[in-house]
Amino acid sequence: MQNNKPSFGNSRREFVKTTGLISGGVIAAPLLSQANFHSGADDTIKVALIGCGGRGTGAAVQALRSKQKVKLVAMADAFRDRLDASYKSITGDLSEAGVSGDLTKMVDVPEERKFTGFDGYQKAIALADVVILATPPGFRPIHFEEAVKQGKHIFMEKPVATDPEGVKKVLVAAEEAKQKKLNVVVGLQRHYQTSYRELFKRKDLIGDITSAQAWWNNDGVWVRPRKEGQTEMEYQMRNWYYFNWLCGDHITEQHIHNIDVINWFKGSYPVKAQGFGGREVRKGKDHGEIFDHHFVEFHYADGSILNSQCRHIPKTSAKVDELLIGTKGKIYCGAANIRDHKGNVLYQFDKKTENEPYQNEHVELFAAIAKGEYKFADAENGAKSTMTSILGRMATYSGQVVEWDKALNCGLNLQPTAYTWDTLPKSLPDANGNYKIAIPGVTKYY
Image 1 (tube, rainbow, N blue to C red):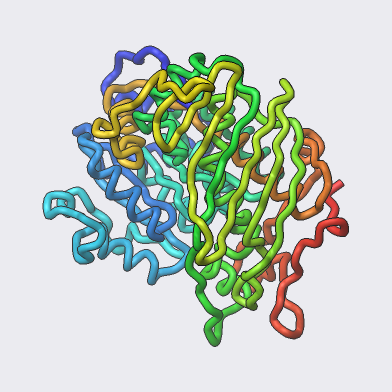
Image 2 (image 1 turned 135 degrees about the horizontal axis):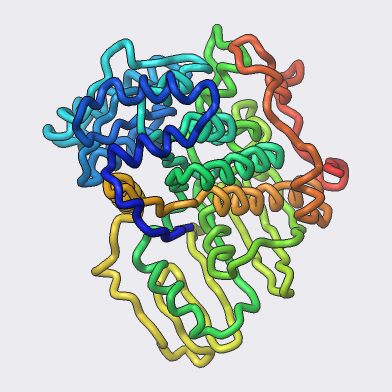
């Protein structure tokens, strides 16, 4: 969430230099000199893209369209083909990217600043003022930690972790980012959407929030089959949506948006959760280990309850929305209105004035950096809303009531022991190619 602070009163260049120097430590000085190498005396904001899939490519284009003096100077991805496709798209060779000719002048990424493999992110981060973190979410904690260590401003996609240990790592780095006055925006874009902001301003119209509902129900997403010659690590990374160490299940990767809205309007996070879920149609070998439906009852400390549902089943009813119910009325987020319990409209947002929130995240972030302002500290909320979704997943997988504090501190770490192509992930297929699936009543976390 936004954290409005007064301007330093410095230029953009001085601001970047100051935040870089605050990093301290042995590593700060050489990294700072590398980061400034390409800027010369101008105020160009240098950007590195970490994770060159569709979302990373889109975020890079949005950064370039932020109306500030921005240049993409480095790119990193585990896979060279993904990096090449992203570069081609960003520079305008793919029409679906919507890149104008003017934007190609803002891309300066020669071969020596294109990095692949598991450690490429460290090299790319060193060359930039701002980093875009858009890899599969399992890598987010280590990438965020490194970007903060190097003293960079950050845009990172949601979710920010896939397990409790990753959440804790992000929370520690978030505090360090605050101390260094590094702007951090998380891709929970409803915080940057005009209609949601206007509804939030008027949430007192419904009195005390007593319950809420949230939905992300649709057909689901892509599947990438295994190819001959792939190691297990490469296969899982290519088909990342179906493995919890990379994705966190769709309750975390997608439904976090809706869950986060309820946390935002409530101003708090659940203390426990219980629910159910399973695999009704996702039963193939390429469907990994995730469920295709979850229903979770989140309990808040004040006694209010969020009933949350997400489903990936083709040809079922689709709904992505949030509803908050209070003592005096209801907030209908999708319809962007507030009504009393008799149905009378208390407020209606004019949808003709709606903005593009994905773009606005970058407009506001880069405007703050250009002005030398410290304004955004989204990482803590991003981590806690991520943990809320993980709490829900732990509840549906186990079939138990799962408490926040115990879940956060249970030690669950889904990450592999090392990041190499030959390292075996913790979740492996059996002799028939099937992965172990959580069983409610059997699966335990503490």
